[in-house]
Length: 631
Picture (cartoon, rainbow, N blue to C red):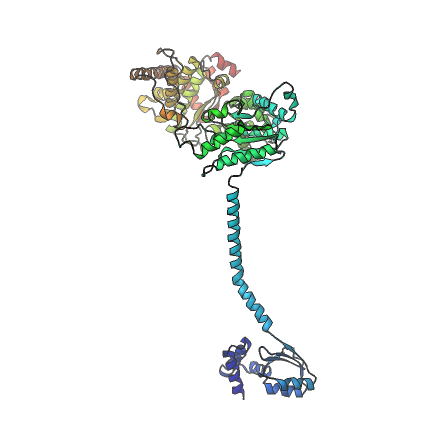
């Protein structure tokens, strides 16, 4: 009988009727052939009923409850025994009227259940596992297609940033060192706030203001200050955002920008780096229908064309005014050109005070001295200077920024990073003689700039040491170089080579003076060809070419004959030779002082200007300008 039951179960499992039948059949076969333990076999026999056993148990009253699954043809039987919590599975027949009648007659609780719903749910879930990724992929594709179509529709729209009331956090009080520019732009802000003050006398608002100056002087900062002060709608955009690969897009964006501006007038439009779109037309590159020229034509029309744009003020910034189109600079378009130049000493001091507000600067630091030591620095340079000093302070674990960190920051920005000092060797002594030669001439020559310090601590970029002067601000800022100042600077520049030749001989001179010779040649050539400081006459023999797209100096041609070129070369060589002989003579006359200064420099590695002048004054009389510094 048991073999017949096993065959029935195996047959039902092979037909795929139910997974549970296959599991039961495999367990029974493993028990028959595999030799299962006796306890497991007894338990298995106890939990497996035949259809007849179930009928018998019902009649004996041992069945408590039965669950009939007509889908799987399985009955789950719960016995009345204490350990009958786990149901016993009994295989049903195709039709079971006798079983139902027995259950009713013996008052056994039974119910019909179906696993078909759970199978449908599992099947649906399995299908969704494949459908959902496909739907997500389709949605992603549709989204990208929609974005592409919307971008195509908005391709000609302006990319200007718009603010109803610009909160840049910058006011005129935060802009220092360019007082003249602030005054002119302050009038624009006043016109926007109180136009009746100007219209009462017949004045009209300027249509455009062009900020011109070298990089880092504060042009964009001024625009932020105007936006913060004016309190009117503010549009900001870069010149490069107008130009695209496709012809006509830039012009469309210009039209859209001015359309928005007219709707919000009075307002400000700030165009940064306008040279990207406002270059001269017809400069030999492209035809008359290229994208940049069409954009510029549309900008010219919007600024001052057939239709007016009352209440719109355009502020633009550039550091290359020489490349701008003449039509862009005429009155009626950019009415004003405000020069934002590098600050003077007073301006540098004001800028340093602004940037020192949020930094812990030691009270002993003199910003006046820092301003005096940084001629030619722009506002961005000075901001970077104090930031580098703050970084050095944190690295050295100090609480406040001292003069030492500021001096080191100046050297780092102007010369390079400090490297490990050289060991005591011939190279170190050679560098010391070279640098002391520069420093000694800077101290003894009457018209040379005073020495700030001399050091033999190497710097990045192959710099073994340097001799640093404090530039004469009046000469540097004004550009009025005297003949005596130029000659003394050439002599001082040749001091390193002269010192090497006097101490080690002509055969032992090195190539360390290569940069010095370039500077000497440049200064001497300017004296002859540009400043008229030679016996060739009061003529300018060279000028810089201002071709916009051809690299300017790339097309420079000599404006003199070959005979004159020979004379110029001779005069340049003559000036350099005379100054070199003078440098050799001074080294020869002060050889003892030169050796002493070198010994001190090798020992200390750095000599400050005051100490250097004090040592020199013990051996010889200092010039008047150097004596003033030393006191």
